Image 1 (tube, rainbow, N blue to C red):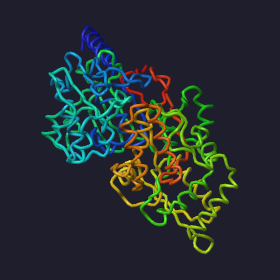
Image 2 (image 1 turned 180 degrees about the vertical axis):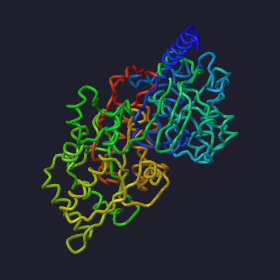
Image 3 (image 1 turned 180 degrees about the horizontal axis):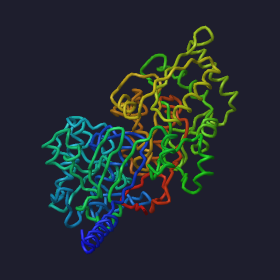
Image 4 (image 1 turned 135 degrees about the vertical axis):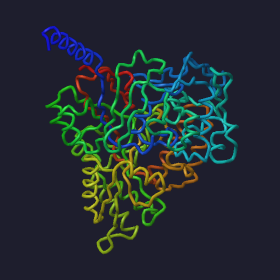
Length: 528
């Protein structure tokens, strides 16, 4: 080859190399503590799924970087004087990821689909404020009678049963995310698979490799695509938190959304301000199967609760990233005030233990007949250490404990689908900042979430009263009465109030710590 040809070839190679570098994909490798069971927004129920779905899809209202409700697919809305009618105006030129136009009818279809009992949505009741939603979901009305209608292609009207102060925030929840009608009808349950799924959010689904990663790529048809800085996001499950830290240190993860609590001190020393800690609006529970003997005895449930040293678990196991929890709802819930605490909140551990032993004796248990408890939990380092510590505390009163642990997807599906258990680990993070979003979990007709089959007519009646009470102070008082009942019946045992721990690489820009634990990837960027 002549020297001229060699120089030309080298120049061409350099140009190609430079071009490849210039267009190199910016990929965010985002740790996610669990594997999603589904990407069907109308069948989802976990926080881990919501992170992915909010990147793929966008509702009428979205979240800001601070997790505040802002305009999403709707550019504006009007509310009637009586607070019962919302009229949304969609943005101009909205498109699905396949180029189809987005219209108000897409939202009508989506809301009718989640309420249709044939869909089997476990989370449908969160949208019961919409007129006739509960009736439709229970088969007492047709989907067409739902209080949602398209006025025209760009205008959607939603009518409510009663004024709902948190309704706009409710629309940020994954149950309000739309689905693409043609894809659902063509592919059925497979509409969520790569190649089939059509989205309207900042990203679209490219790959789903179970136990490895879920890859999203930028959606060029998103209305705000010009401001989306990432080319791709890989959601990588890491239920083994210690292993997740090692992957982060090796550069395989750019962030983690839960950290091993027993390593918090060393992580702060090693990673300094890359460790982000803050409050999180949620509660860490044990669900007790109230329908199963001997756990249908309130004395047994109260004894189990009294014997738990919450300060020890929060401080020693969770490294003070959590706070001891003595109420069903964490402090700071909107439209509420101070929670209803357990009556023994301020008793000494010794006094509590004596009272618990007395209750166990009255329930028929003692040295010759120990209470036996099986705890079911989803496997993470923090959960494992917590349930073992609590079992040791119960042992002081002669309680014998065994364990069943599975991955998060299996664990939550077992509870949601009515599987058998005695005591089960559970966590609830607020979908909307309102007491109703906690208390509805234990209403007797709440499918999918009332896993312990709790049934108290007085509790149900109070929630029904609160649902139609327009005075916020009176409404809060009614709900506090309901929470007081829970603190006596103890169908779910509150143990800790959540704190949020994140590990964020310096390469990731735009991260804002917030009490909702919501960090949409559309606001983030990554330096190379």
